[in-house]
Length: 301
Image (cartoon, rainbow, N blue to C red; front, side, top):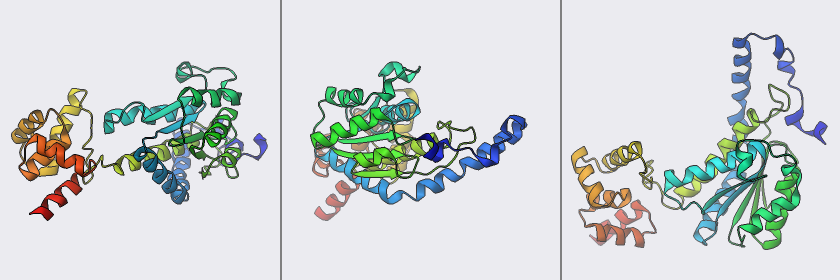
C-alpha cells in the first residue's frame, strides 16, 4: 500500500540530503514548500463544498468535527481550539478528535491510528447527529481510525468530508466530499509533517475561517467576534472598532466598555448612534451580520 502513495515516495531532488549544507537543506525545503499553495488551489472547488456544508451544519445546530491521527489529528485540534478566541465560538462547535485522545497531542500512542473501532467510538461519545459535519484528515489517506469514524458518521447520516494528500485515497471512499491535495514526495522521505502537514493546515484554516465568516463573524475584513480574553485581544478589539467606524481611540474605548466588551454591538452603537439594547436587537434580526444590520437601518431611513 505505501508503495502507491506519493507522500511515501522518494524525492529525486533531495537524494543527497545528508550531504547538503544547512543552507542547501533550507533552500530545498523552501523550494518544495512553494509548491503547496499551488496544490491546494487545484482543490478549491472541493474545499468550497466543505465550507458550504460546514455553514449549513452550524445553521442547523450541528458541529464541525475534525478527526485524524498524529500530525493530522494535532492540526485538527489546533484549528478547532483557535476558533474559540478568534470567533467567540463555543468550544463544542468546532471539535478536534485525535486518535489516542489528549495524550496523543504530546506523545505517540501506539496502535491508536490503526483502530477503526476507536474512531467510531470517539464520535459516538460526542453523540454525533445527522446535523454534524465530520471531516476525516489523513495525509496518507488510509488511516483506519479516520475510516472508522467516517463509516460511523455515514451510518448516523451526518455529512462527511475527507482531506488527504494522495490521489484516489482510501478515505475518499467513505466521504461525501473528498479533498485530495497531491503534495508529492517529501524532502525527508515519508515525513508528512512537512509539505503534507502544511497543506492540511492551509485547508483546515480555510474551512474554519470561511465558514465562520459565513456566519457573520467578520465585518469587512475585521474579526468582529474576537474573544477579548487577554490584554492583546482587548487592544485589538478597540482597534477593530476604530477601523470599522473611523472613530478615535477614546470613543472606541468608551463605547467598547459600555457595550460590555461586545465588539459587534459597539460598532453598531457608533455607526447607527443607538443604545446597546437596540444594537443587540438589530444584530439578532440580522443573524449576527453587522453589514445586514446597517443596510436594514438605511432602508428604514
